[in-house]
Image (cartoon, rainbow, N blue to C red):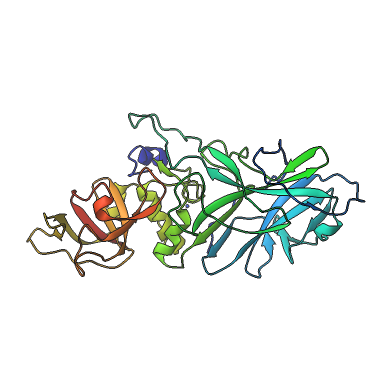
Length: 368
């Protein structure tokens, strides 16, 4: 009940890599998407056995490829590998493979039954959703609509992960989160890894971890971890049954407060998701002020508010963002300084002047 109560105050809303939960269910039979590029055949045409399942495994640099969500920095390489199953026999070109938490041995794809492979993104269809009705009441988990989009010129057994969205604005330029599906066509059969149909159901608006998810962050700083959320929708009143099952923790999306808390949790802070009104309980006040006609924020004594440091929070009434860079008048907080936030759009970096809240009183705060 705590999470539902907090969620109704959104953006103000009501948990190394976050733990993944649940075993992957890899089999999904689908009709071939109409927009797929012409794929090339792989495998041995003399092998007549039927493909029984298709999975995707992801490897970060030289690590073993696994079927769990992948997290990497922008200076690392994430490779997606096709995994084909014929009964209990596996085929993949991954140099090392871990499925369901166990090391497994796979034969090369060249020895698999002949198939054609087509890779596609599974991405949010819109940049903003709401878990409440138009009157901010009647909380519910709004299903996030996902669509598959073909990845051009990707038809082999492996693929370099690219997390840039195509259906919503790309504010990350190579950082953020993307989900993937692989379709194998064998004769008149199409077998696919889990995709847009793999809904979590109750207590969620998104997809299960059976859908391969890759998150690429700018670096290992607080702001860097926030960039993992790029490409995911703003969700008014984002929530969860616990911190571990929160929509933000699962990278389904976030409102403004849950967005800034997500980054803090990724740096190792043991704090709960909360709404903007709850942020003072887990942060320290650095300064407060209002904007003058010159765009500079001044405190109650008329003195300019000093720009603190990148990663500190700028808290408005019912909205929040994280400071990114000192612009405009250097050394003081003004409306040309850059902040990272989520507000009715996927997360992005904007001048405070373009935040929609620049004329409101501000508090500068730092996570304890």
